[in-house]
Image 1: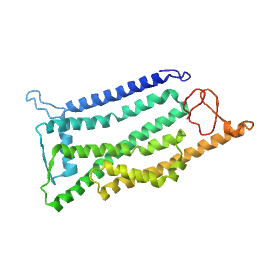
Image 2 (image 1 turned 30 degrees about the horizontal axis):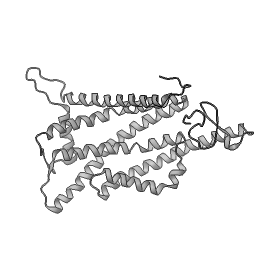
Image 3 (image 1 turned 30 degrees about the vertical axis):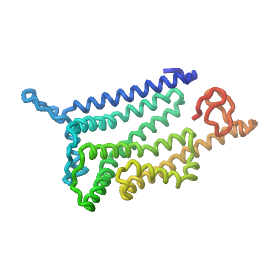
Image 4 (image 1 turned 135 degrees about the vertical axis):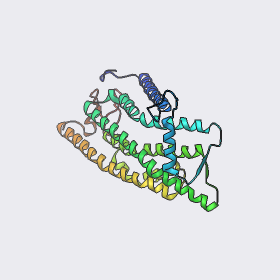
Length: 300
């Protein structure tokens, strides 16, 4: 780990980022392999040699919880069951690897942070992981079943037999659940960006309609049904989460503004436009600058 007082060359940043990404991919691979081999029953009979993978239990439960007896799943290709087996393992691997992913993100930016900023990151990692898991649960228990049942309506309208390809069904469920989990982390990202001064709540409030319009388009793209009800079920909770994050972020923003005003009062002889200093090298900076013109480092 490098010293906080030494500036790391740009190429070193790229190399460290590469190493962090390698760790994330390695964690995903190990988690996937683990779930590929993990048995449904730890009490395996060594004589009979009967072995049932846990993935098969997950697959059956997803079918029961989401579709029930409403459709009949068909393989379509001889390799589809094997593909589904790997897809289920990857799905579980991504969920179980989320703490490692959050930690690697934290470890990458940690050397540039002061102790009080580290506390911010600790809260961000906890909030990011928590919101992701809440989003996964919401996607699985609410959004995915609603999307699927909405699509079944058109089977009745057209008189089509409810025969669904195996991979189509499970790809829909797993993709919806993971994407919704990621979308639910948006409030945590917004709050931490405000606390670091990258964005402001004023910018959000000023462009609220455009932001929500873009958010609804994104939701319409990640929810395959394109149905108004399905989109609204995901859109409304996100609006509430974002509005709550604005309230929380505004409190931190007011505290930050008060600290800057106090700094200006303590240095009355300085030019107000030059009352800000780089926290690393002490060089005077103009208000609103994100990077020091002297050392080039980002300001918290």
